[in-house]
Amino acid sequence: MRTEWVNRRRGQANVSQMHYARQGVFTEEMHYVAKRENLPVELIRDEVARGRMIIPANINHTNLEPMCIGIASKCKVNANLGASPNSSDINKEVEKLNLAVKYGADTVMDLSTGGGDLDVIRTAIIKASPVPIGTVPIYQALESVHGSIEKLTAEDFLHIIEKHAQQGVDYMTIHAGILIEHLPLVRSRITGIVSRGGGIIARWMLHHHKQNPLYTHFDEIIEIFKKYDVSFSLGDSLRPGCQHDASDEAQLAELKTLGQLTRRAWEHDVQVMVEGPGHVPMDQIEFNVKKQMEECSEAPFYVLGPLVTDIAPGYDHITSAIGAAMAGWYGTAMLCYVTPKEHLGLPDAEDVRNGLIAYKIAAHAADIARHRPGARDRDDQLSQARYNFDWNRQFELALDPDRAREYHDETLPADIYKTAEFCSMCGPKFCPMQTKVDADALTELEKFLASQEKETVTQS
Ligand SMILES: C[C@H]1O[C@@H](n2cnc3c(N)ncnc32)[C@H](O)[C@@H]1O
Ligand SMILES: Cc1ncc(COP(=O)(O)O)c(N)n1
Ligand code: SF4
Ligand SMILES: [Zn+2]
Image (tube, helix red, strand yellow):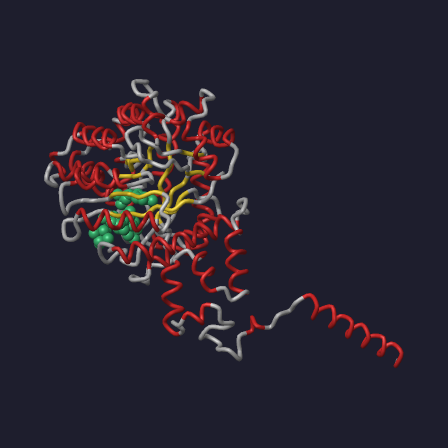
């Protein structure tokens, strides 16, 4: 679909959606996104020009169905996947991608660090994906020097970044905000650095006693991104890894740098979103969202969770979906899912499903609470089906139809029960929804109550 759209742009110095938006141009992607979101195309263009919305759409990802990320549109959900050296391979990862798309992931990140040729895995994922693909190129940069930080150079980073851009990656996490002077600030933390990319850069700076190469070469990265329309996802290397470390000096110092980098990318019409924490107590979530908007001039915020407690390994899709729902409500543009395997191991296909559904719930709850147009329509439809005991329609409208049907079938598998006026929770005699409070019954009741009232008046 996009092949023709992008062919006309090839060879231009800057092919970013932001560049076109700022020239007043409506791209095909903007029209597509406007239809999807049921929003005026002028609004899409203005938000993209302003930097409050991005359309991650590499010109080399031609099978992409364009989408947008920004506070003016629906809250989005990202699913992480990718092979790791101890587990998984290319087939399993493509299967996870298909599952993620099936359950409604708006974007997918390939965070592979091993388990096969990283280029082969990534290109297979891009080719199979209608949703934008994000990556963290420094993982592969480290792999390319066989894990020895001392050998890594700025040229290695730029080389891999250009390669990912050429392959069609739509957005990249760039950990440019962690500066050498921030490192002493993590001394008082319980969990130090928990960002994988942040850890690589921190070790590099500790070894070389030099400034972050992604920071010092930021302008060169901008030049690469312009050519392909790659969006920045500015990485939060110093995100807190536990409740204790949340909103500390280290995190906020990096956030300030992320704001400066946002505006530097914008000077070149390159699109930006900003990554955020992590692990944050509920009472600090609003502060975190507002602070990001203030420091980063309202560039879309993209948060991992946040987990609102640290004591539930095995259930961190829940501890984090609670935080994600709140973050979305306060105006976060995209929620990065956390699966039940977080802190324990590599998620498998079933974890992808459970994590994604938890986040579809969080994002949708945020859309309802923010009164986004039409957000509650599906809730109302499902509720109607529920009240009418139309079980099949209920399953159809469910975020996870398979799970809903499976659970209903567990106790009442026969077809006849798909129209039954009860389920096995209360049984046929106790189902309160059988109490039809209809208009006729109420009119009759009102008449009766009125007559009672008259009697009382005459009696007294
Ligand atoms: C930044 C987030 O990325 C997740 N993460 C890192 N690597 C992978 C992978 N291969 N698959 C799925 N999730 C991953 C971590 O769980 C962390 O929460
Ligand atoms: C929301 C989000 N998603 C992915 C990453 C990259 O992971 P890492 O920083 O651990 O390399 C991140 N920093 N934030
Ligand atoms: S998830 Fe596992 S590998 Fe990743 S930071 Fe935690 S302990 Fe380390
Ligand atoms: Zn964690």
